[in-house]
Image 1 (cartoon, rainbow, N blue to C red):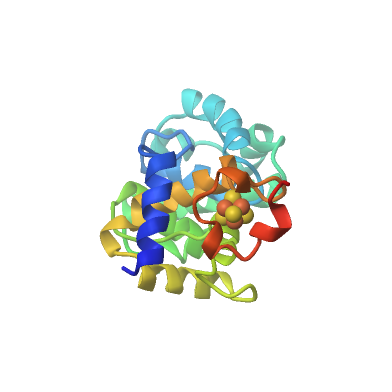
Image 2: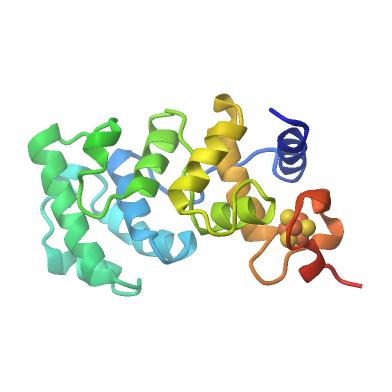
Length: 212
Ligand code: SF4
């Protein structure tokens, strides 16, 4: 890794030495559903709705007893809850029928499940199966672009490819969480803490947000 990437890793490790996924789950299907639900909403909001659902239906066998309208009643506080409920219902069905109730650990299979895109696949691979992957969400994308790890007009896929090239593979899983924490609690979209930041020399937006 280059000096810049090492300094980023060091600063993020100083700020967030221990990080973990903020979605609550106890098994593979619970994590998969939570990540599908997290599209365009916060982990906190997802945890609120899954807490009740997973308490009453903790396993895929039990979840498979629910129909789409049951899911809608649990997810109604989330945006896009109708689409999400349908996707969750269908993906449970597929995992039960085609994968014997176990969420598959292969990218090609995960990406074919309803509502599961590249980001969800990467989260599942990295978080549950511990297969190195670098999921790019809105925070990871913003931080990468601010720190000139990617161009401002790069696609999400391009950002992911650049991050994987620049950072050592054994750091990806932890670094992904550290980027998210950095974006959520330090380098936020509208009020980043530039005056405490040690990465100003690499940042394309320092001058915009620094406070005099
Ligand atoms: Fe974020 Fe400010 Fe640091 Fe740039 S200087 S990375 S905008 S906190």
